[in-house]
Image (cartoon, rainbow, N blue to C red):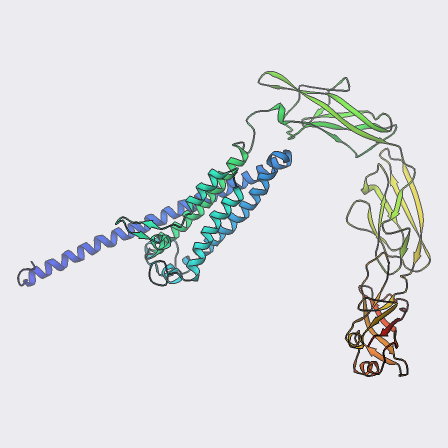
Amino acid sequence: MAGGKLTPRQKMINLMYLIFIAMLALNMSKEVLQAFGLMDEKLEASNVAATTRNKSSYENLALKAVEQKEKYGDEKVKADKIKKLSNDYYNYIEGIKEEMKATVDDPTDYETMDKGKYLDDNFFKGDDGDYKEAGQEFLGNMDNFSSQMGSILGKEFKGIGDGIIKRFSTEKVTNRDGEERFWLDYNYKGFPLIASLTKLTQIQADIKTSETEVLSAMLQGQLAEDAGINANTYNTILIPKSPATLQGENFQGKIVLGRYDSSLVPTKVIVNGKEITNIKDGGAVLDFPAGNVGENQIKGKFIFMQDGVPVEIPIETTYAVVAKPNSAVISADKMNVVYRGVQNPMTISVPGVADNVVKASAPGLRKVKGVGKYMMSPGKGREVKINVNAKLPDGTPITSSQMFRINDIPAPVAAVRGEYGMIKMPKSTLQKATISSVLPDFVFDLKINTNGFSVKVPGQPTVIVKGNKFNAAAIRVLNKARRGDAVIIFDVKQKLVGNSGYYLKNASPVNVEITN
C-alpha cells in the first residue's frame, strides 16, 4: 500500500480501518475505566468494614488494659498512638480524593474520569523526580507513616513494623522495560483520574490492614469474647449496697464474678459457711448482720458448671463497718473562718450517709460539683450558722449545726514590681514600674486591679496619678528626688477582680529609697 499511489477507494478503506481501530480502543478504555471504578467501590466498602472491626479491637484492647494493666497497659499506649497516626494519614488521603472528585461533574460516572490532569498539575513539575510542594508532601506523609509505625511498634512487634515499612515503601521501581523510575511517577504520573483514585483508596486499605495486623498481635488473637469460661481470668467482686454499714444494721450487697455477665448463673454460692440461695442477675444477693465496727471478712466459694464439671472460684474479700453517727462533719477547706468578698470552698458530709440525702443550708451557701462540696459567700454580720439535716440508712433523721466567723479580706499593701514595705531602686526603674496592691500571706489567691495612686517626693508637692504607672507629672517630681530620698506611694485606688462591689480596705503605703 505504501509502494505506489493509492486509489481513492484504497484511501477510503484505510480510513475505515483507522476509525474501526479507534472505536475498539475507545470501547476498551471505557471498560477499563469502569473496572477501576467498580474496584474503588469495593475497596471503599472494605475500608468501612475494616474501620468497624478495628474500632471493636481498640475497644477490646482498652478493656483488657483495664482488667490486666500490667499485661496490656503498654500495648494500649501504643495502640492509642497508632490509632491517631492512622486516622490522621487516612484523613489526609481522603482529603486528596475529595479534591480530585471535585474536578468532575459526577464522581460516579467513571467513563468520564479518563484524564490525569489534577495530579499531573499538582504533584509534578516536569522530569521524573521533580515534584511540586504537594507531591513532596504526599511522599513525606507516606514515609512518615511507615517510619512512625515502625518506631511505635519497636522490637516487640518488629516483624509487623518491617512489613508495614515495606508496604508503604517509596523506593524506585523497575518497569517492564528494565528501567528504574521514581515511585511517585511510576504510580501516578499520566494515569486516568479514576485509576489514581483507586490507588489512593488502596493506600487507605493498607492503612486499615496495618492497624488490623497490629491489633491482632497485641490482643494475641483474643478479640471480642472468650469462647468459654476460664476460671483463671475471673475474680469475685463484692458490691455493697452502701459504702459503709452502720453498727447494728444488716450488711447488704452482692457478690458477682469479674467480667460481670447476668446470664452466668452460679450453681451454688457459699458465704461464711452458709449457702446463699437468693441469686439475681448472675449475682448472689447478701443480707446478714454487719458485725463489729471495723474491717470484716467474707469468705466462701462461687460454684458454676463448665462442660458438665463444677468449677469453684474462691471468695475472699472484706467490708467496713462504721459506728452510727449522731452529728455531721463540717469543715472549711481553707481555715476555720470564712471571708467576705470571696468564694469559700467547704466540705460537708455525714459518715456512712450518701451525699444525696445530706442537706446543708446557710445564708450564702450553695452546692457545687463534687461529693460533699459547697461554696460559701458570706454576707453581712460577723458569724454564719450552717445547718445540716440527713437521714441514716435506717431512716433515722439527724440534725447538726456549726457556727463560723466571718472576716473581711485583710487590708492590702501597696507594691512596686510586686515588692512592698521599704524597698530601694533607681529613679529610672521606679518611673517605669507598675504599681499594684498585694495581700501577703493571704490564704486566697486574689487579683486586684490598680486604678490610681498618689506620689510624694520630699520637698515636692503630692502628685495624683490615674492608672498603675507613673505619668508625666509624677516623673517630673521624681526626677527632682536625690539619692537617699524616700519616695512614698500611697492612697492606692483598687478594685477586686470578679467582685467589683466589694470595697477593699485602704492599702498600706510603700516607701522607695532612691539609689541614684
